[in-house]
Amino acid sequence: MQVIQIVGLLWVVLAAPVWADDVRPYGTPARYALRSVVYYPDLRVVYRGERIITEPTGAVVHRDFDISTDCTVISVSLAPGQDAAEFDAAIGTYVLEVGGTRERTAALKPDELIVWEKPAFSRALAARTTAPTRP
Image 1 (tube, rainbow, N blue to C red):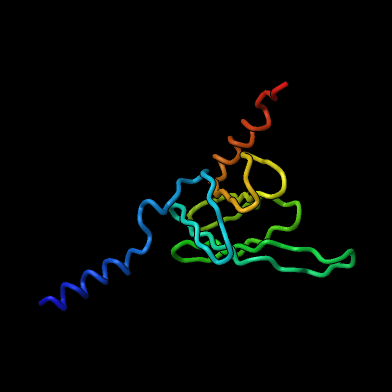
Image 2: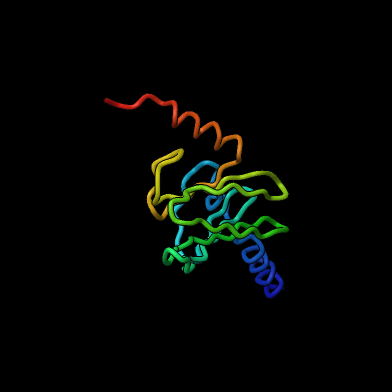
């Protein structure tokens, strides 16, 4: 009987590896690192690392991310100077915003990202660009 209880407990722990505290609301920044997973309500974001592409003008470094839902995986690659990418998942349209280039909706550190639902991203961007600047 104890074996069944232990197996049952292990199943619960292994079947639900993401705790509620690990899931961030859309529009909140998260730190990322190589192969780390950032959880949002319906999406998981994995930073796969940098990829060097040789072009006639020289080498260009892209940052690669995998964004997955329960049924699909979307690969997003950000080129130098590109700080946001829109992507469509079966469940909606989202924007992946990363730090390290220019400020869009928030001041992000180079190792931070935000996943936005598209309408909320548009509102945050509009609020950021119309906000009065400090003297």
